[in-house]
Image: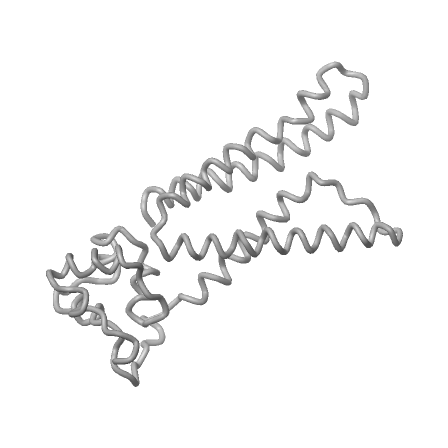
Length: 205
């Protein structure tokens, strides 16, 4: 994990944890001080760590490689859609006598669904080569694994040189992910080859 990833894993979960703590504290203070003049300020305290967590997420998205960005954009779309469906459904159930759901729990729900979506999306590209090596029955789509082996580089070594995640290298080598043109140029330049010498068209696989 690069420095941006390490920073994010601290800031975002920390912000969400602070949100929950401040939410509980603010509810307690509001319930026990019904006439206090500072009630409005206390009520919005949980928004502070929420904003910090959002800023951490935006910074992290900007520093991700293209595969990681795709994974998390898929996860965010899943979380937004699932949250909308669940809250809409619950709103209809409230008409049938179900208890009222406060909007303050929508954000934690969305964060949880985003985590689930990221895990599911990442699993699509995961490759456990150490435990279960992949035997390719058809010609390789690219020569990335061979070129890396010729230089005695591990996947982590190649990922560092390309400034991408190891998961991206895994997905590229197994044909689960096609690189963007800028990344393809970067890979070819790293090995001192043309793009055509590294990647083959689909109809040549």
